[in-house]
Image (cartoon, rainbow, N blue to C red; front, top):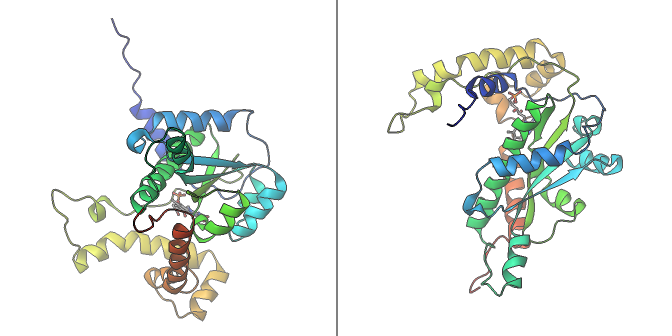
Amino acid sequence: MSTPEPDLAPAFAALMDRHRSIRAYRSDPLPEGLADAVLVQALQGGSSSGNLNLVSVVKTQDTARRQALWALHGEQDMILQAPLVLTFCADSHRTRAWLAQRDARLGFADLVSWHTAAFDAMLLAQTAALAFESHGLGICYMGTTLFAMRGIADLLELPDNVLPVTSLVVGWPDEAPPQRDRLPATAWIHDERYARPTPGRIDADFAARELRGRQRYLASSPRMAALWQEHGIDSLAQYYTSPIKYDPDRFAAFSADIEALLAERGWRRSPGA
Ligand SMILES: Cc1cc2nc3c(=O)[nH]c(=O)nc-3n(C[C@H](O)[C@H](O)[C@H](O)COP(=O)(O)O)c2cc1C
């Protein structure tokens, strides 16, 4: 007779409810071996395209190397506080070496493989993030990985067909921020067909976000309020694509860098190959 599975749903709900990105850390180390154990568990317990495991993770704990990452990641101070930074990489280098060693046709050096490997890396990062949080640790993603791909790849000595996709800071929280909102289900869950949002739907779906955004950025930060005024920003939407947040011109330049890097580091198939 099989033993009934414990009901995992409440444990998962509690874990989801507890999530906050943590940006202030104590310097206390992680228990010996925990990072590797969590990563192994996360890869084993997550899905992986074709089960190819086109990922690598570089752990950075050394103070001087964390300082170098801090500079590359736009000087986000949490990197200097937390004991561990994990860089999740899309990696077909190892798989290609295996193919070559077994006289197999070489592959996985094209845009499809980049997507496959990059998504595998993101899936692993998120599974690992949940696992770290289940131990009471805090995490924060660093999207700056994309903007500093080349510098990070060089610092971590990544070979061809390996590029960083995202990074996690991991450590013991030194803050307890409130939970951040998400868009309501009406904004993004569709039945059978995509329902294009009407102007009224947009107003309703973004109302709470606009209110909380104003409170967060303006009411509690005189510096940010001054910046909004300086840049003529008077709504959260205007803030998001202003020069002080996700400037489309800067994004275009970063995008061009990424395209060039993908070609340079072997993620574009050369014609006739
Ligand atoms: C891919 C990705 C990149 C992110 N990059 C950064 C970052 O560079 N710095 C930062 O402070 N937070 C970063 N975050 C955290 C988000 O700002 C955060 O998840 C979001 O504001 C929601 O807050 P919460 O995670 O506390 O619920 C990133 C999150 C994701 C998923």
